[in-house]
Image (cartoon, rainbow, N blue to C red; front, side, top):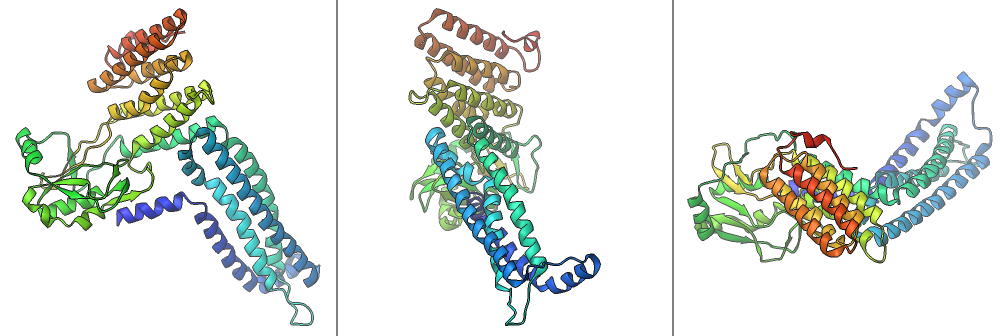
Amino acid sequence: MKTLTFRYWDRIRSSLWFIPTMMALGAVFLAFISVALDRPVTNWLLRSWGWTFTAGAEGASAVLGIIAGSMITIAGVVFSMTLVALSLATSQLGPRLLRNFLRDTTTQVVLGTFVATFLYCLLVLLTIRRAEEVAFVPHVSIALGVLFAVASVGVLIYFIHHVSVSMQANEIVARVSDELIAGVDRLFPEQIGRGTSRTSATPPESAFLDAFDREARPIPASADGYIQFIDTDALIELAMQKDVVIRLERVPGDYVVSGGPLMLVWPGERAADVPADQVNNTFALGNQRTSGQDIEFAVTQLVEVALRALSSGVNDPFTAITCVDHLASALSRLATRDMPSPYRYDSTDQLRVIAPGSTFVDVTDAAFNQIRQMSRSNTAVTVRLLETIAEVARFVQRPEDRAALLRHAEMIARGASEGQPEVEDRQKVEERFEYAKQLLSVSPMTGSDHGNGLS
């Protein structure tokens, strides 16, 4: 059930149709309600305020017809502007950012506003009857239609501003960064709750792990695609029912091939008792990676923007530096969080699921490797990478994390010494490297060097 919910909710969030459809249905409902209540409300307004729509049936039809026609025209213009923005963003910053634009709530609400106003005016227009019939002019409903038209003008002005701002590289990078930081907060919370199934940082005995490697049997995947979501709670329940231990061979973000191993089951003789279809139902597969449980996906989006900015066809190091700055924000937060243990136990302290996950080292590799390789000859980006490592070094707490940062700093400095011909540039890089190395050699949040930067 969780996998189905995730799959459909992710499709809804990444679509341009859901919010406009809901707003259109709301407009239909409002049209029927306003027409049904129009006569008593109009009589009350006439008695209390002396207000009514005086243009008659012909005037009312003309007003609503003009509003409906203009709204559907503007909706087409808005859709065209959206497609132009999507085309420019994907060609300059990468096609994987298309999903972020489709999930833009502002664009969906703007489209919904014009479509809903069109449908409302159209339905109210159908209720107007001329003098040769039983005359009926829905005064209040027409007034609401005019009010919606005025509000739509304000929405159009705001949308033009929103499109012009959202197409800027810094805004796009900031939006992806917000998604990355939200993923860090969601997948690596500061206080991890404990339910009936708990995690433990203590690994099992080595004898058990050796036996697992020898005797475990695979459960194959039934389809191809990227893993978007894994229902680990359902896997633990299944392991408890069959009294087995499960180890995931694929994690969110990995691509699986039909028939390939999805997980291993121990003891091996009980693997046949574990239904393959029930196992596959706990995995949500799709044609693209998502950020639901894949923290490295948002990292690779920022990296992709930086790589395109560093390409010879674009040559925009300022955008690449902006991406590196936002990567520093995410890595600094991640460095202070506890890494979830891969060992999941049930309520009786029985190991049930081994679920490897992303660590700080993995995310750091995804963040720095390709940018480092592309920026060897660019002093500005190389210096900012080393400054970022120095900044993140203030937050790291685990020795393996410090070793990973030091490894990247050494590779960056080594690449710069080979790729930059100017002596002064190499000296500048070396100064930043020595400073980062100094910070990585002391305990986190201690030492006098933490308050001193390089000018």
